[in-house]
Length: 242
Image: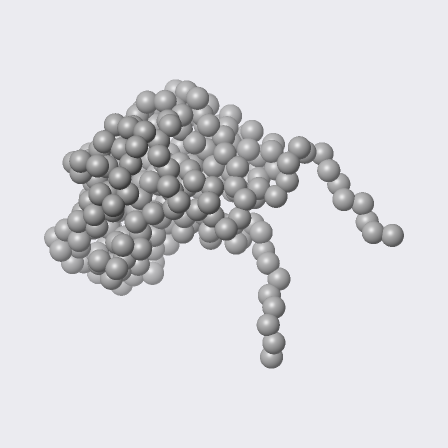
């Protein structure tokens, strides 16, 4: 007789939970907010209170709603939790402490690992939604010296500002791709010591391949990190032959 399978939840199979802010943006494949980005099931929780830009300003009033969303995802049965904004790295420790499963709020968590991959005279280029707000507090929160990082922002790029920062419901992917590539090329040109690039904003991974082809460097983002965590929490058997 086959062993009984234990139930107790309403749905199954979603290993990764994603905390979303409350904004009706266009999220194309490659964006963490588009479920087809991943080769495995994910599930989402929208934080209704996060409907302005204060999540990018380390707003303390949002901590409790983000924690509530994480707890709800844990209760739903996910094995790990991520978010839709790299600036939520500011809340990393508090959210992780509130649940009993791994939490990885931001691609910025990759910075210490990437630095160890590079030569000691190289730095990491971070392309962020708003450079003026990505200050030393965020790097301290993820455990890296800010002097090891070079930051470039997308806040002055017209399509990015319109579609991402100003929350317009439409998006021109080609325009945004070209803007990101231009920012990346200028970053590397001005800072030839950059040995890898991290995309902080979760709406930038759709264009990571274009960036990589333009600057010929490794490009990391939240999708990179989510795939890595998934492979750790849902291990697969190996197959092949000898």
